[in-house]
Length: 486
Image (cartoon, rainbow, N blue to C red; front, side):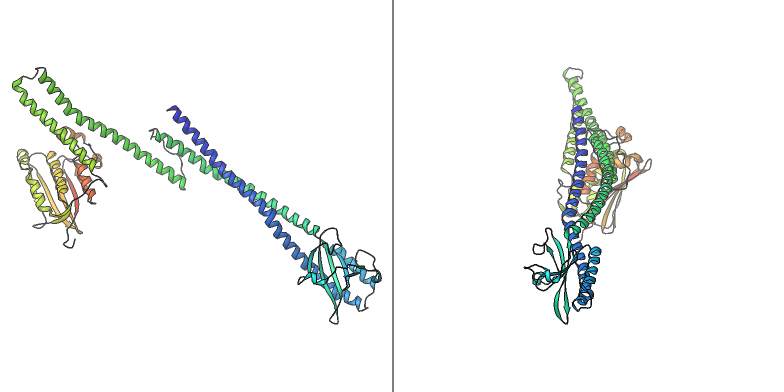
């Protein structure tokens, strides 16, 4: 048993570690996935957004330069010096190089270099169609730069003729740095969220794992037969419901164990008493204690005890066959009133001996039901036999049939000693006998009412008992009323 307890306690600890480990691995996986989502997907999406936004802004500035300054310069309304000064100021403000390019790819004006139109640098591969239907592109701009730039252009049109282009170049490193700062904010936010999530998961794990550990430890105690330990978990969630169900189950198992012990004790008592009598009388006859002329008397007692044992064994075998699956019913139509009359006649001798009379109050000349006639006759027989056992002399036993809501109700009522209130709910248990009945009934097996209930339940009907000590007891059971269309 000690090894068993040790193994179970280890399993509880392993369970705790495993559950928390699973939660932690799930949390860690979520954190890693979140990191990679931000690093890859979010980074790409945010950079694309920043690039498009910056390109749109630069295009707006390029278009402004084209319409306000470049057109004035090409129309000779602005000197080269003034134009260059304005471009230099805008270069500083926009952090971007500003070029005025000819249609042939010549850099006519450079915001960061002193250039003259006659000595302009030429980008021989320049072709405005490379921009396709977009106003921007990313790259080294035909190999001019050593690192990637975002290049945005706007045409310079005078009298509906393109005279050149305003081109703005911004290093993509600037965009990447801005995107990095944005990602850092996201990483910090993710870290704070993960920190709070870990605290919540840890608290949630404690609220789940610790109660489950208590439930498991208590279940181990129940497995060892200790049903006295309650599950001390008081909450209104599923764990609390489980704990309450487990405690309720322990109470039922404890009651069942007590019933089983009582059942075994009663069986042992009811078998041991006749066996002891038989053994004692046989030994007395063998050793000569009982003389030969008296042996017939004691052989009759032995026969009586043997029949009682046989009856007890048959009742146990019969109960073993009864149940929701084991009992097979032979359903037929029969007259319950006639069957009650015939059954009452079998007790005529016993009733005369105890001066007990029957009062039969039967509805109609005949009252047909649909049931197993043999088994229902056994029910009526057992109830009448039980009523006779516990009825004093000069009393009446009433058997009545009534109809209500398409059901037949059969009542067997005596004016006997009654059943104590605390015992009324247990009379259907096998071998159960009240202390009063144990002293008065030497022939009973304690199985009659258990057989009665099994038969009635097999018919999917109900049976109830009403009793008052010193007044009497009434048993009422129901049967289906037969209909011709059945």
